[in-house]
Length: 87
Image (cartoon, rainbow, N blue to C red; front, side):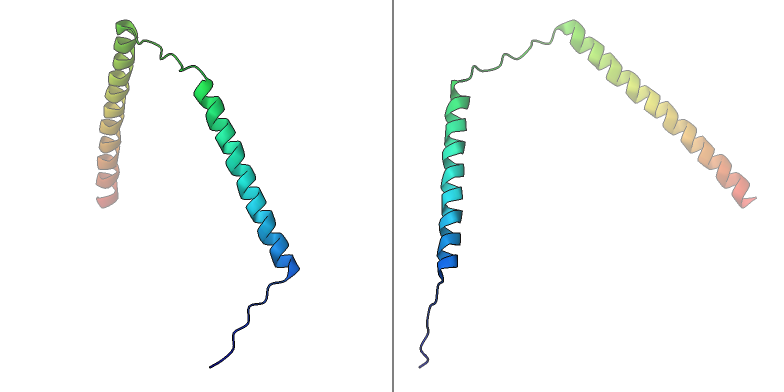
């Protein structure tokens, strides 16, 4: 049976201690930030009026229509290119 030895140097002990110190420090900072955030007021959500909703909806529908028209034009261009290419 082989003897196993466990060697640890002073440098390793200092490094481990430093890492533990940093982790504990970060934990304390995070806990402080959490407590501070709990004290902040809850932000008020702005109400979306019917007019704003309708305007946004119209903009989305207009964008979809424009994109659809662009897609139709691209398909026509591709057909023309194919016709010229295969003639």
